[in-house]
Amino acid sequence: MTPSLLSLPLAFDARAIEKRVGLILLSTDHSTEADFARLVAGPRVGLFATRVEYANPVTPANLRAMEPRLGAAAALLLPDEPLDAICFSCTSASVAIGDAAVEAAIAAAKPGVPIVTPPGAAARALAQFGARRISLLTPYTVETTAGMADYFEARGFDLASVSCLGLEDDREMARIAPASLVEAAVAATDPQAEALFVSCTALRSALIVSAVEARIGRPVVTSNQATAWACLGLCGVVPAPGLKAGRLFDMPYDVAG
Image (cartoon, rainbow, N blue to C red):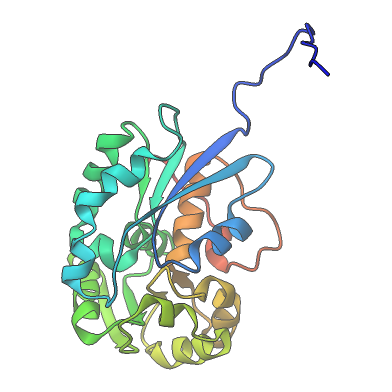
């Protein structure tokens, strides 16, 4: 049968979904999409993901090797269409490459779009709490963790303690059981710290923020929780109720700040 062409008038929306968040993920990432699907996606916000080639182990050299690939990955995010935010979802790579260099590489392909990095979002979240003396927990080796510590000290934070788990493969980091993460986070929190930052987008730590806050009685910031909060703020969208994402999701995001 020959198809018939309908001549009905069609109405078109300006966008298929009101707000657009782009995600640049490592090729080995198991956790970010699940966290953003729970914390960010909704009737007003759509997620658009691409991946950048990455090879373990997690070392500063391997992390820096991604920099030349970021522009090509960003270019695949809805080509020729605007986005409301782009998140490069790797905390340690953002530190190793540098936030400014990450932003420049992505902006070359998607100019004019606000760019979120996990350490930048975490620093902003900690400042929102007024926390200056913090504890830091990472799943990385001592070498990679040292760069993370330097990052936060350079931004004016006083590190009460720095702890790491000594892992070299982000796929193994993603498999750490949430209950184990809770115990590690509690053990890593110094009594004098005003807040705890749990680094790494591979960790399923966004799931356990409320549980850790209940144990330590202080704010907890994690990589995916902080970037989700920042992306929602850039979209002008209030987090959905009942997410159990910790105190941060009750805090306003100042776009101008």
